[in-house]
Image (cartoon, rainbow, N blue to C red):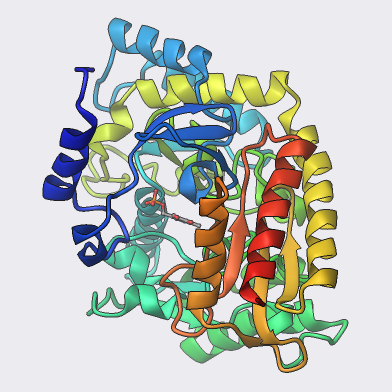
Amino acid sequence: MKPYDLKEIVSSDKNHLWHHLTQHKPLQSTDPMVIVEGKGMRVKDINGREYLDAVSGGVWTVNVGYGRESIANAVRDQLVKMCYFANSAGNIPSIQFAERLIEKMPGLSRVYYSNSGSEANEKGFKLVRQLAAMKNDGKKHKVIYRDRDYHGTTITTLSACGQSQRKDQYGPYTPGFVEIPHCLAYRAANGDDPDYGVQAAKELERVILEEDPDTVGSVCLEPITAGGGVIVPPEGYFETIQEICRKYGVLLHMDEVVCGMGRTGKWFGYQHYGVKPDIVTMAKGVASGYAAISVTVTTEDLFNEFLAEPSDKLSYFRDISTFGGCAGGPAAALENMRIIEEENLLDNVNQRGAYLMDRLHELKDKHPLVGDVRGKGLFVGADLVKDRNTREPVDESVAAAVVADCLRQGVMIGRTNRSFAEYNNTLCLSPALICTNDDIDEIVSAIDIALGNLSQ
Ligand SMILES: Cc1ncc(COP(=O)(O)O)c(C=O)c1O
């Protein structure tokens, strides 16, 4: 990389970059953040200021932490040897990573590569559409998704998006996507009922029957909803979802783009709930952001549906993702997985996750603004409310002020952002899987101070 002049680079950012999820007007009078270095849990900005990153690169991605030379070396070595070939041919790391991945996913056996979470989910939707076309004259083509879930940024993944504000102004959407209610006990009228999980799951059956079971191909769900407010499914929820899927011949598609690769303390979020999905998608933590890679994994049964005589010109999965053939992605993913195993990071997630949850409960005891804390492993959220009794959410400016105050203190935390008009009120924490109790203390202390400053 060429040496750069600090002022020039910032002005070049202002003149040429169009940042994600950013209103640029305020940047006319302030400078954008430019991140230049990262090591372990910490990143440094262009002015030399260091931050503790409690959100793994902003969006649950850098699971094994920054500055991993062994991943960089694995990618470099692979790129020098063989950087790319379209994935109609195999390459060594993609084959080896597929095998290692499948060892962690009993019941699943086929691995399809692409390069973003949105794209991995689109593959899942395309499989459903094509299967319907091949077997049912296109009838069993609908995809059910859930309120508050997010599956990507393309028009079709937004068609499967349960976050109203994210969808605003980008329609019209792809037909054949149908919503079911969320399963957030804290915000459900019957959320205190011990049977709430089963009742919430039965909404799936209600909608399948309303739509006609012969038209419903799959249901796509996040195991634990991420950007929709860190929603851990209530007891009995996924078991009931699985039963309903089997009853009506509906494929279960689990979106593990955030939960996958250890974030929740198991390799995959769905593995907490004993379900057997037909399709699993993953992206962010697969290579911890060291290379762009996403994966759609399926059962052998689903794969077999696409086997046909070559004279049948249409009945194979006629899909390609150019960058699904990049060999650097699976090379990074192999090394990323080796690190998680060698450093026992799943154990660390479970232990540090329990500590983080305890510390957040202390915050809840201290600050009436914290209405609910929830999560699994190193994936937690704090729902901020105006009033504990009514559970009325705070305005998003309050959550934004807490995030900004933490940043001023040198700690990066996240929040539900431009997802809903009324529920942009959840603080989100997802530190790297390597974090220590000291890191957690620093994160919680920053939030404690920020919440205290609000009430002054
Ligand atoms: C659950 C979930 N699925 C899919 C996606 C989309 O992934 P990408 O941004 O890589 O397309 C995201 C992104 O945040 C996500 O949180």
